[in-house]
View 1 (cartoon, rainbow, N blue to C red):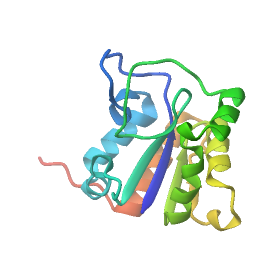
View 2: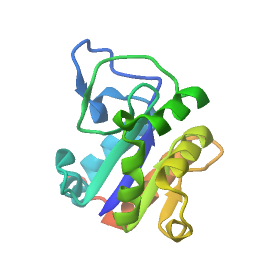
View 3: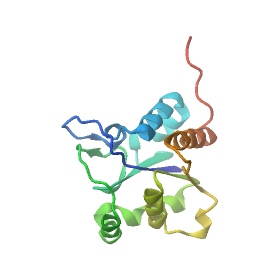
Length: 167
C-alpha cells in the first residue's frame, strides 16, 4: 500500500453541500493531485475512490477535522491548523491522529505533502520511527511549483508514466 497525506487548502470549492475532501480542497496541490489521478490510470485504479483496501490511500490533515480520508465528505469551512489545535488532535481519538502511525507502518511508500508546519504534524502522527525514514518522502521545495513537481514525481515513481493523450 502507498500512502499520501496532503495538507488541507485555504482555497476550497464553495458549494454549500458537503463533498468528498478530494473535491472540496482546490488549492494548487489538490488540483495537481486530481490531474495526476486523471493522467495516471494505475494511480487512479489504486486509489479507487477511497476503498479501505485500496492500494493507494490518500488522507488530508485538516485544520478542523484532523486526519481524514479524502473520500470523506466535508462542508465548506475555514480553520487553519495551529499548534494548539494540533495538540488537541494528539489527545482526542476522533481526529484519527493515532491511526496514522499504523498506516505508515503498513505502507511501503509514504508522501507527506504540505507546508513545513503541516509536514511536522504528519511526522508527529507517524510516530517518528527510524525505520520510516527510508519510505517517507516529503514535498519540500522552495515554492508551490516545486511541491507540485515533487508530487508528480512521486506518483510517476510509484505508478508509472502518464498515459499518452489521444490526438
